[in-house]
Length: 385
Image (tube, rainbow, N blue to C red; front, side, top):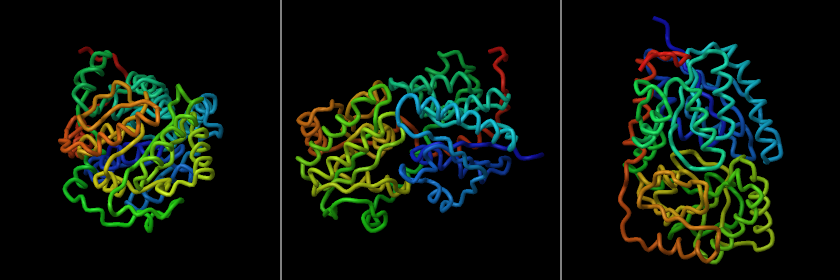
């Protein structure tokens, strides 16, 4: 029996950690062949080129798709997605996969779904069924309706996908593969590297050994005009807190220019002594950084998913994660310096935050590979159920 060829498209730096253990499980499964395609901002140095990390982890990249148009605004997002459809259509025509995997909800992931679905290639969607608001939710649900097999991260998400009219027999709660990495880190949480020496970055050589914060703040696509103003509020709060801080660069969504410009402006004018900036970090190193931190601040889904499992305190700012199921570790606030400071102090002083398994138990990658290997995936939805 020939191997079932599974093409996985990774379009951004954070998506790699969302799928890494599933990639390994697919690669090592006796009945599956992994075809790994890297595309979009995952190929760009300014957003933390993920290719070196991926290849160092032992994965072979069969195709690279350059599709990002400059601009970081809604028009460039639409054009990037259109270019992605055209380029990925050629890639799938060439590779002839038995199924394609699209990951989560980033704006450009819809290009993967369209390019596969329109060529009658079965589509597998990872992490559908969640709600957050903004363009991510629209893309996530659109991916769901184009997909033929749904591998969701929570029971709530599973119920929502079924309510959207999908065949219950094709919806599985596997948990999120990023929790697999979190489980490994939780079992061995020691911070066994020096972030400054290993990853360089820019900014002050902060004295992080006695405790530090982590910030990861992305622009909100439906509020992109305020991204510069929003990030400045967070920068002001972090500077005033005067706690050593590792700050990570934003992703390529609309408004990224505003966020990046705000960071550069603040860095040049105010020269914060307590902040060091990074573009990227290996997924497991990043999780070790988080589990040993005082608190994560910003609006990344890592605060909702991995930090819930790890029991890391989180201050979630703004609307980017609206309505997403979360644990007791998260405290929500708005873009106000005083509110952010109070929220961080609240989280830091929280005596105990219990681990939650909302998004998985640490074995998602293996579950995903087994389901894909043992499920007959059709590229149409005419089956009675």
